[in-house]
Image (cartoon, rainbow, N blue to C red; front, side, top):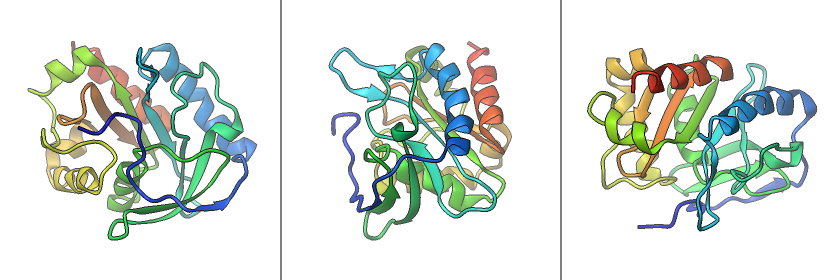
Length: 200
């Protein structure tokens, strides 16, 4: 199994720059809550986990946390990236940023491709929820690892199920501890995850 946190796609850099302050503020206010809940963090071996993204109505692409930033209590504008475009056939993501984008960028991209109403995606790690909610929520295949084209295709498969539209949350069965929620904005994605975990 591939070690968590390693980027498994090509990621050509378009421009080295931080995201603008407006986008930063939208992302950071929710990320701090996510970090404080320990949904984003770092494992003892130093590998970070968890990420979030959003897109703006008047722009193409989306914005996402940079790779290996889970250990940071507070992120700065340079800790986020703008994804300009992506290509599943080429296994490639084009971005602007000071750091490489999250290893889950292709997974986030699929949500935005599937539904114009989705404007935020949250990927957290929660061992207890991951174990218990596999019986109650839509799940990706156990042999599908994180950050791959196959994971993106699993999201596409699951999104054909009305149940996922209702729950707006899923379990990444092949990515230990991983859960994803999504919504019309970051607040909704966060609230859905919080409400889902309250079932435990």
